[in-house]
Length: 157
Image (cartoon, rainbow, N blue to C red; front, side, top):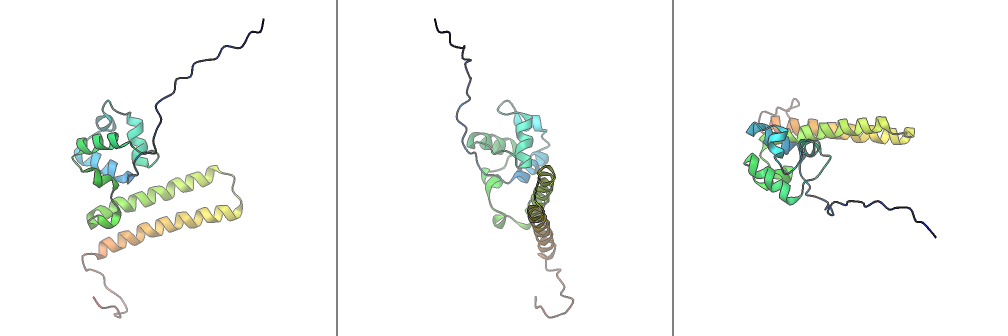
């Protein structure tokens, strides 16, 4: 008689979708403005760790979870998903912090990988471009109030 090995039942979760693309820094900003902890924002729908992953840009929420986050923070869903061009300059600091955070994550990632010198240099270029972009946005925000002064005197207001 042929005896087959026992197969374990594998519990599968429901199929996960790709999630909604969000701007991670906005979750943290909205949570902080409401004075919510990670657990307070997570509630019973998701874990604190998942909220942390959203804030770090490591995960994407479903539409339902994003609606819960929007309701608890008192923000519209579009606040978490809209592009930087649609924002008043007061929200550009969030974009700046997102760029800096992304550059730090890429730097850490490059440190964990075995890269050729060419690839290592490519990572450095990307990291520097992210940081320079953050500086550029920060400078544009400072100068948005018309305080820009061209030392050469060649530019007109």
